[in-house]
Length: 115
Length: 113
Image (cartoon, rainbow over all chains, first blue to last red; front, side, top):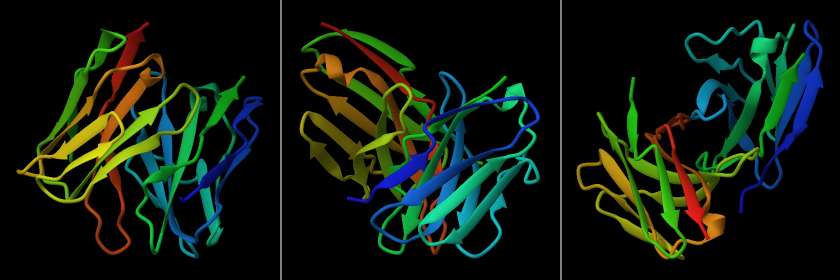
């Protein structure tokens, strides 16, 4: 079945630095990738939709200059949290959709802790 | 926007018992999905439902797509300790390149051995 790989699985960074999270589709071409954020004991909140070769579409209230998304190839999307602050600490999860797949499969998530 | 009401929020059951949880929506979805999430991991797809009225099983799990397309339930029979986790329903209205999921708030399941 479709496999989505996310890296790193966890990262700790200092306030003010930037962190890049990768999302890869391993056995299919992902024309669309989705980035979610999840706070403890809460549901997944969609942050943005990333289409290969075009600009990402951000959900209301998500700062596009803070959460930079790049989807330069059909198998890789990256989320960069710029100038991270402690309130950006969260669990970030991606999912991917291809021409023959619905977005049914998620990566294993990245736990970001900003100190 | 679309909202999903998922209930119950949490359940504490004994091993061997059956479990039922459901989701309702204020609007129609053309696909319903059920996921399980273990701590520190991404959601794993359990069952996908594509047609109103559809009843689908996956081992001890059974899910149904409501006939009105505004609700779905998930049943787990003969629960075991590894069923512990958070279960999420999600609705999807796919069209063209739009595959945006709407998630319920989750049901936390605890199974006592």
